[in-house]
Image (cartoon, rainbow, N blue to C red; front, side, top):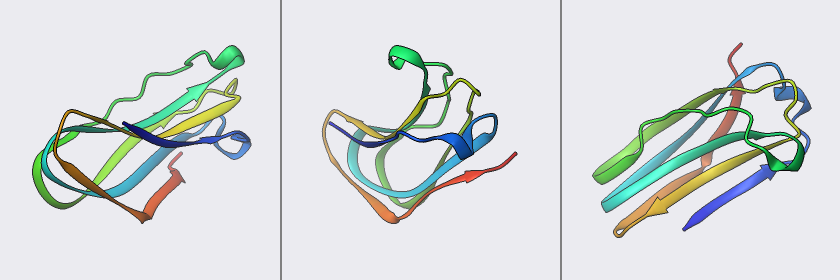
Length: 101
């Protein structure tokens, strides 16, 4: 399963490092990953951003992914991918995108 949004006007993020944070809780979860993917023409991926996927059983934990957003970015795919079984909760009020440099 994947949930996400597409920031179609990423002007303020271009050329900056962006941090996406969200609080996530899991119960016997196989794997949940954050996505922060800058895309250019024809939805070509312009950068690969790394993070630590969540899994197992955890209390509310802040998860962070950071990515350098190239100046050629035309849209910014963001979201969460869930593989396998178990349960997870995302505090959508905590979801934010910040320019860190």
